[in-house]
Length: 324
Image (cartoon, rainbow, N blue to C red; front, side, top):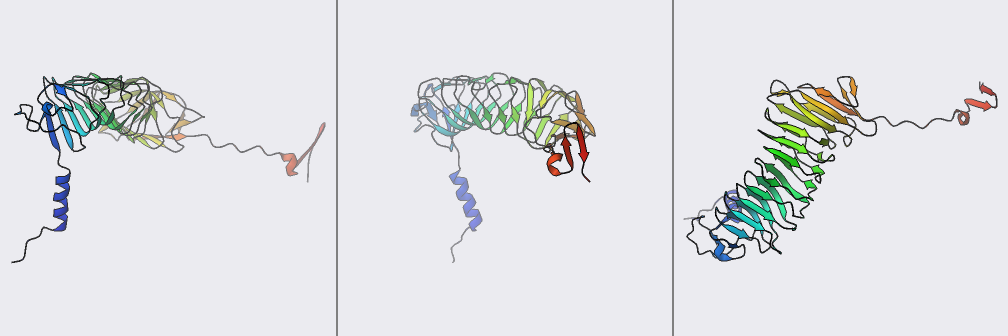
């Protein structure tokens, strides 16, 4: 009888799944991250007897309720989750975390002046105080759905999405969000700086209470669509100075989406918005649902022609003559 073989595609899929299997580590004791006795691979309830600590990109560390884990090493892990009542203390010298996805479900997270690396930051409860961290960018995105998140004071780049579902202020240091912006149910966003550029093509304002409270929203080059759900929305100040000639700003199509009003328009170099044939260099501007405005940059002005050199016009003192 011939031996049975799996099709190559299935064999490769199984091998890939096994290679990417996530190992979960639960903190069953309050101790250092590097201590094997801190962790168990079964659950927060034990039974104990851990044989290692989470240190690889395929590892997930779960900080259990009532337990404090002290970051005393330099782990590079796939996932860190702080459960409600758990504590992750990253104030110890030498304790630097590199993590693909960081989530706080209601615990306490503190840090010192260290350059942690975050792929994503998800905050849905508790306290995540990263203000002292020297982290300058987040590699994937930020989702904040509860109060208590303080981003690093020197953060300049969110290389992905920003999703806000609570009252939240984006630090003035953040100059770029490369992905889409969403202000979701119950969210209110304040831009503390005037130079935060939104690179994604979509801006979602998803709830009657979802609003941009104050500050300047700046669009990078490229077409943008603002989706105002459930009611008309207002943007306090929109900066189009980085947008290119011909780029458009649209409002989502009715009846699913509503009008968007821009109270103040910030421009540079003579740029303005053309909305249905009406030119705006300042606000207020209302973009009705389903319509769009186009960024218009002034055309380059041709250098003046010296008609004397062309031979068309010659000049003498007290006299102008036109050559035939």
